[in-house]
Amino acid sequence: MRQADELAFASRALTVIEVNGTYYRTQTPETFAKWAAETPDGFVFALKAPRFATSRRVLAESSESISRFLGSGLTELGPKLGPINWQLPTTKKFDPADMAAFLDLLPDRLEGLPLRHAIEARHDSFACDEFTTLLRDRGIAAVQAEDGEYPRIDAPTAPFAYLRIMGTREDEPLGYSGGDLDRWAARLRDMARTREVFLFVISGHKAANPAAAQALIERL
Picture (tube, rainbow, N blue to C red):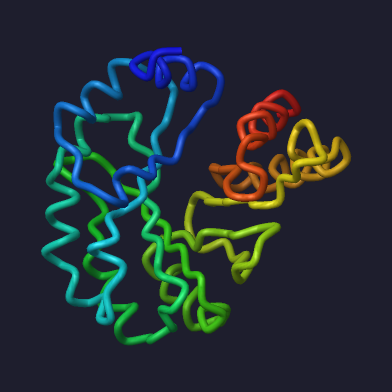
């Protein structure tokens, strides 16, 4: 398959994709508009926020990086813009004052378009009530890391849930066993009674991740 055709194909096999490229470099309005045009109605893009905003000692000093990212053309996605994942480094420890100041830099809307934010904290110090309270007060989600090495923060702090599951294995054709996929589907159905749910299959045995995602879509 030509690289130029990959997005059109993938967006019809899946219902949402988390874009990692926005973590490493600034995109353009033309790129976002092209992505929107190539994908069907109802498809959603979740975006990884840029590392320049999150990989710093003092998060509260990231205002300029946040503004540059939000001004890079995200609104061209229109209703296809999903949650933004602000992924923190594994070495970043929880600092209540700094985290509160950072969260206050994240706007609710961008040129009239509603924004949804999720924080992916990957240090054990974030597994505390004080962190989830900060998120709940602002309607921001805590990314739930599952089946992997990062702390599992399972707290309903926003009107949506953002999960990243990391347990696919090479010895399973669909990444997970049929029983595990059934259990995940049941859990997602239960969560979806009260929240919109976004789930991404990452890490693990990467070659099987699309198959695992499609197997969950079929069950749901």
